[in-house]
Length: 234
View 1: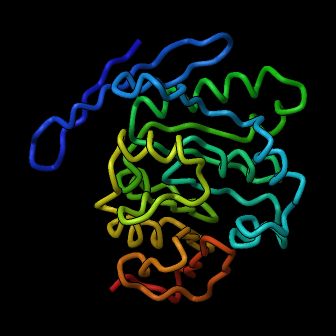
View 2 (view 1 turned 90 degrees about the horizontal axis):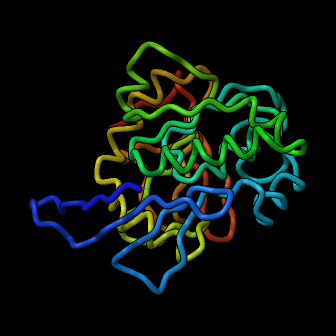
C-alpha cells in the first residue's frame, strides 16, 4: 500500500490521500478522501478499449499517428496516464513506449502490462509495450528518438473528455493540471522523426501557441499534428 499526499503549488497540502491496494487480480488506486468512490485501475481489456481496437487504424488517433499508412511505427506516449491510448496503438501494430512520471500511475501501468502479458488475447500487443518511469522532457532530451510522439497533457480548464468522470477526478486530484505542458512541445519536435501528435479539447489553444501542420477533429477533442522539420514552438 502506498499513501501519498500531494501539495498545491503554494506549498499547502490539499488533503488528498491516495492508496495503492490489491483488489482481486489487479492493483487499484483508492482515494481515501473519497471513500464513496470506487478505486481506479488501468484496464486494457475494458469494452471501450476493445471497441477502439475493433475500429482499426482509421480511428482518429491511429490516423493522426499515421498508422493507416504505416502500422509498425515506434511511438512514445509521453503522457501515458492509464495507458489506454498506448495499448490501443500497440494492439494495432505500433511499438509503444509508455512514459509516466507519477509513481502511482506507473504502478498501475505495470500491473496492467503484467495482466495483458498473461492473457492469450492481449499477449502479443503487450509485448510491443515498454513502460518507463520518467519525466517526459528529460526522456525526450536523453538522445532517444521515436517515429511519433503522442502528447495528451491534462488541460487545466476542462475535463479530459475521453475519460470517464471518476477517472478524470482521480487524475486531476492526483497530478493536478499539467501546468508545464507547453514545455513538452519543443523537446518532442526534436525527438520525433516523423510527427508529434497533441490531443486537445476542441476549444483549447495550441500547445505553446504553436500552430500545427494540420488537425484531425472529432466531436469532443482534436489532434494537432506537427511535422518536426516544419514546426517550431513560439
